[in-house]
Length: 349
Image (cartoon, rainbow, N blue to C red; front, side, top):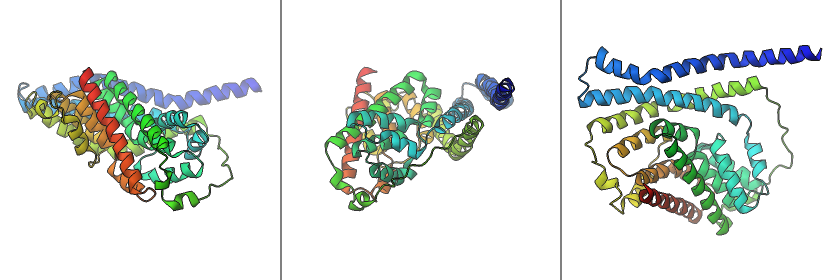
């Protein structure tokens, strides 16, 4: 009887994995042939002169759009399965009672794999504070969650390679950890709106529901449908802008404004980036084109981090629970950290 159950369970797992395996093989076939198809369409189908700027621009666009979308689909699917193991309650429970710096590290790491964005900033902030999670640890999570996510990592890997993606992840985590630690040490709890601390956390614990592997696989499909369905248009627009810069902006054009030799390029890029708002899908293809035209890596990383990490909508939303001195401190510390990263990588590279 037991052997029969084991066989049935194995058969069920194989059945569940069959469709993802077939889709992965199809994904791999397309991914390995994109560049060849883009070149064939540009040169052989519509018969453009391959030495013209328009042909170069079109080929760039036709190659990068499907490549980035395919990478995004794969990683979002995998991360969707990983995220099925986390819930807001479980995340909050993990961070409860942790000492300050250890809590900052754990909160930053959790922020990279949990499905939260600026729209959930207030509920998360309230939930963490109610549960006794320190203010600095809460900010480490809120900084890491939008800045270091699978979309940013996939796009950076696809457009720049694993080294740049790793640099971005590492520096982003350090900014989240250190910024949260500093905010915690400054003891700024008095600048949280008074009503926040009057809310009492419910003493009852929510019982974790057992989720089947089939349901977790479905979570991956749902994540692809939800996330890619929302941002595909930003990817196309971003790559279209990047393709235009790639094809028509002269070489080294950006060196004068965003190059290593201009000391003010890093703070200027942060000042420009902070009030702007875009997700990773929209900004990273443009960043790639800026690098190609002579902008330095540190300046471009600083610009990208300020746009993604210091989200204007999130800052406006947090005004409902934070007083202005704490908001300005938060923005100032994170912006200073981003500028340090920019200068550091301009020196190294």
